[in-house]
Image: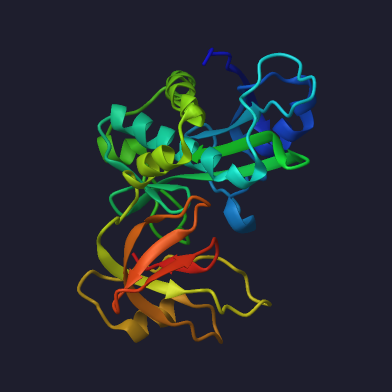
Length: 290
């Protein structure tokens, strides 16, 4: 696939995803908007993305898809809305491969957070627009912790490239390097979905390991639907304490043991339970206990 990314940097902006949405109609496929600082950075589930100014990569990538209409300029191949998990998978795999270039064993915590060890190094927010049953555009917002080494206490398990390696990084050069990896990975759109799923699964955090989860599928509708990460000392295996820390006040959400076996073609998480049955979970239905 031809490389066409053009990176536009801002010193301060509300949100790179917001700005990309405002400019999308006049930008080419694979355009990138990056910011030294976001005043209203957004993460998944309506969360704020917290990052110190000038220390991390916060950027958005625009993908434009062929929709069968007259599309100006270069576009990605047509992709049905039902296959939009492919975009999340490719972007997550690209981040893992990029970090591996810098000596970090990065994994995908389903569906698209990036972990090194048990620390979150990157998050992603993807916003799609449709044309009938096909994708028209996809805005891929990524926040990667780079040079920040101190984080707010309310973030349970953050980590950064500098915190891992002890090295400082040039953000502009780093983003150009990432885009070269991303553009290589974008060719995976041409692969059969089964092959792309295999690649994604090979990068999954805790794949094949028995671990504890929180069942959020019955979470009351009036509470925030956030998959929760509970951080507990490694020696503490008291499930009731885990549940108490992980849940919002007034809730009683069960914890359970399971083994991640992969994902479905639609991107649902497949977890094998202790009775050997396999249950699938949609976004917001399961929380990890770290």
